[in-house]
Image (cartoon, rainbow, N blue to C red; front, top):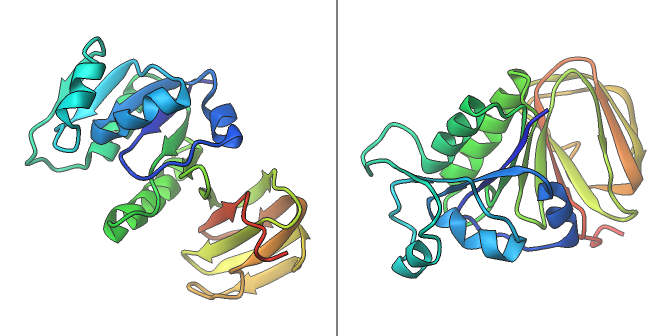
Length: 214
């Protein structure tokens, strides 16, 4: 397996969990996402984008990194370019850091849909801000290592059939969930959570350090 971390320009909280997730991975930075490299203790092998969100000081700091520039008028975001580049370099799974939240709801939703698509193509993808994580739930079983009291939600992007949740305050056993239902929002982990789905498409969003539901 070849695990890549992609650094996007969104906000990122540097946590021990995040550092462990990116340790030993190959790294590609997308435009202003390079600002996270120093704090994470990583050196990207490539820097892609139109560089419209990379200040001069950042460009000067990382002069030795190979750059792959693109025009501002293009048919893909810098983040998607980084994804395609990682796959071309052999990525079999991805951590996309700085992909959620921020001022651009369109970008955040696009990244959720992109993670779903990538996982369907056989490339498991974790989106993270360091404080919040998202990953696709398709048919099968997903296990998430969460501490007791951590919040998590399942967002159904289609009708879900046979949804089972174990290790949570509000368990389910082969439930049927409508697309867009809020029934699976704001659950609380009792420890590691195991989620099994017979069919459907959903995103699981977890907040490992958020104990407000406890």
